[in-house]
Length: 116
Image 1: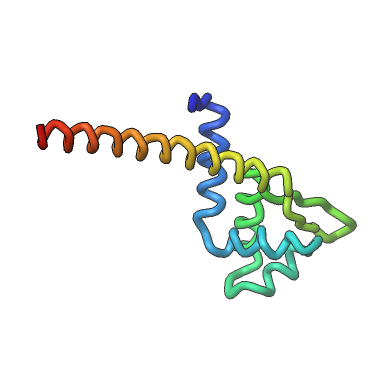
Image 2: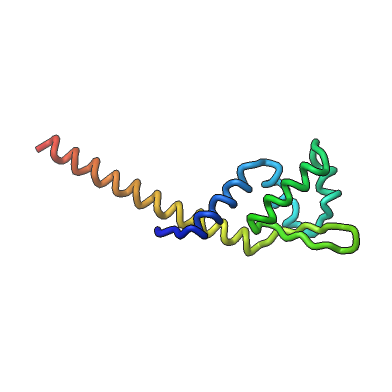
């Protein structure tokens, strides 16, 4: 798997975004429809500003979209961003499974050499 700098940066943003339990919960909660940042902030034992920062990280990773309607900022999960995350994880899984298979082959060869 060849990763260019854009893909690597995007992967870093995705892993950073999903590294926090609050951000993962925001993505899951926003899958069920639009929510204001204010209503999201009431769900968590932290300041409104802290929730805004979490939303900004998710928006930068393209996992949510934020739109303004009047004075409200509405948050919704970006399903295309979630699909890209799934695709990235599938690619990584494929690479690691291939490496594990290769290690199994090496071990089998070593076992054969030891019994000869």
